[in-house]
Picture 1 (cartoon, rainbow, N blue to C red):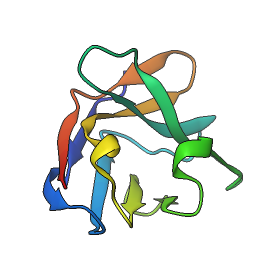
Picture 2: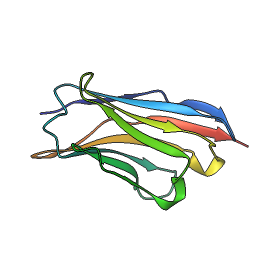
Picture 3: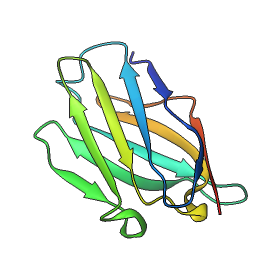
Picture 4: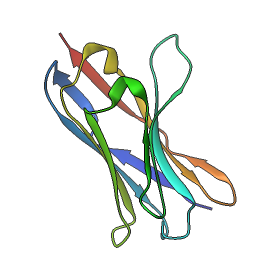
Length: 114
C-alpha cells in the first residue's frame, strides 16, 4: 500500500508559477513510475507528466516547455514545477504511482486567474 499526499496547489495569476509536491508513504525507488494527472470541471482526467524510476519523463503536449516533473528518491517525493501558467491549467491535480498496483492521491486544486 502506498499513500500519496499532494501539496502546493493554490491560486496563481496567468504567467505565474506554482510547485506541486507529492509525498509518498514509502520508498518510491521500486515504483515503476510516478506522475501527475489533472481533471478540470466537466472534463476527464488527463495525463500531465510522468517520470520513471530511471528518470525518463513524458509530458502532455499542452504543458511541454512550461512544466517540469522531477523526483527525489531520498525524500520519497515527486514534484511538478509549473511555469507560465494559463487559465486553462485550472484543475485538480492528482499524484499517481505505478507499482504492483496503481495508487492515487486525493488531489490539490490549482486555479489560474487571467
